[in-house]
Length: 128
Image (cartoon, rainbow, N blue to C red; front, side, top):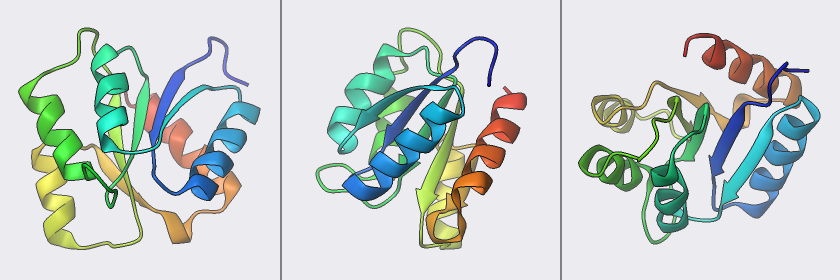
């Protein structure tokens, strides 16, 4: 359990993945907010105050790179922690572009089991 509840925003259009990540991270002691697409994610991310944002790359309405561009152009009122991309596509060009736009790193969703997700989240949060 974390001593003070760190807030994590999950921006993910896949309901199953979103629900599983939310459940796993809540059990690990984090406060979770979710967004179902990039547009909703922008609104929530611009409120700020998140320790970590998990951002899906491929989404309808506004993809992960669009969210990163928007956050760069209109920074949140209150600073957020690191942004980590969620992807099944480890395409270097997308990852490089995302990192130029402020993403910290990426997780390949298909490679993550629940324990690994919590471990990776803890590691990222230790670097903020």
